Length: 354
Image (cartoon, rainbow, N blue to C red; front, side, top):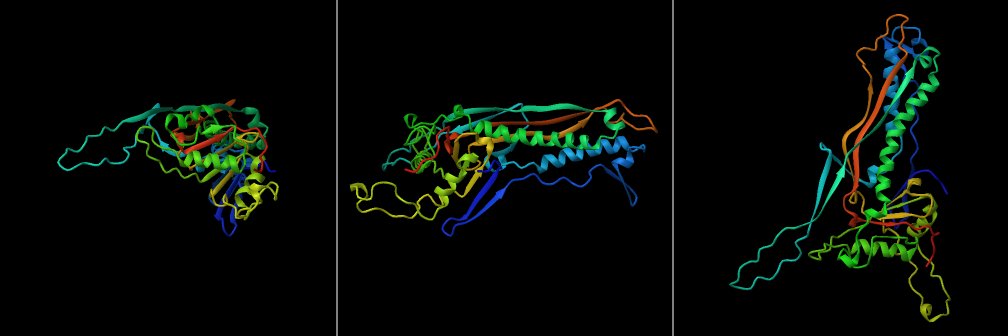
């Protein structure tokens, strides 16, 4: 069992061809603290004794932070939809389906219809960030390794914040409100402590595939194609979804298995992507969904780094400032746009064969 984040793309289920990618952080550039003077390259160690040091420090910190932000492996882009936002919060509306057209007898007027809204959803955007300082001691005593590590952590923090925000929405049982009693589908609730098994997966598939409009009863045609699991379910999911055949469990002589059944695996090819992420939980939770239909991340402004009074920070000969302050900021919102496209299991039970 691995705690690494993985993306398993099922390329050809019948031939058993798949692509398994382990998301690892990309290596850092050799030396981002550097400046060019014509054909000569000056490193941080050399620059510490020159009047270019504050410029190199500023540019180096920002470069490392951005580099680590882009290099941090994330999966939210495969799970959630993305939209730009220019408001404090965005109002999303969910329209009712029209349904089937009624018969119009000869000589009678066509009936008028009214387009109704099922519900509205407000997703608020939040600014996230912090301020950090680079002290004179870090500069004077040339603790370059510490500056580099800290700068990288700022970028990682921003990337991880977006990732965790999406998973927090995805695994919040309060965001799943659909049920057959409300006319949302033909099976039942789209969240439960469903044990991962053939029966449990079949329940989730049927729940999503029968999702429909409450008013008209029109089926939405939801096609779940993505399974998101924690590391403890990786082996069970691979065995159930990728095996070429399945073996019935039970007494071969009983009436129920007198004639037996087919051994081809009907679950093979049900989904075309499996995401294994430790952010789903330390137990046996799982999500089945149609990718990028349920959760949305809306961005006001992306990851940014600001330097305090940048125009005033200049190095003149031997003079150094006591503290240089930076602000890291990201501005976005995440919400469950349409939970009819997702099924969440909060199970804490080990997977079973049934």
